[in-house]
Image (cartoon, rainbow, N blue to C red; front, side, top):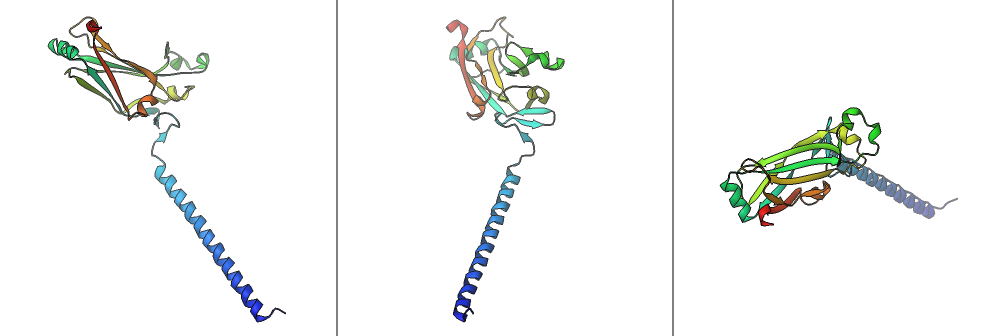
Length: 202
């Protein structure tokens, strides 16, 4: 027979094991609840596109993150444009690569050009010229059906800046341009700076 002393020791050990299992179960449930809470907080209303510069799918469209272009002009360029009431234009062209052009639907195939698949284009004009001119691109979208056929979901962007040809027949500016992955802009605070001056100064 087990004497009372040994029985007491076994009883204490059993109680300790039960308390330990109970605490571990509560801890696991707490961790699970915490993970569920984090998942709920981090799940956005609109579906983000993985690895694609914070692009968001919203219905049949893909929303491009808001960003800004700052165009800085030389003193001579500002003087000439202001004197002649000439504007400047920032021309944007979003594009991407596809693997098999031949098997694309006809309505998408017609958007293929020298740079790849045209996703969207936008021209922004500034008429009140200053040394520093800011262009804001907000709530800009393109069709999801174009995005779905891209081989690389990190889309590209081409930006060119030129004079508006209101006062002059030809472009009079010599400006920096941008032609790279859109992530180059989103990883730098959704901002890009382009500088330039007059062609006649070059």
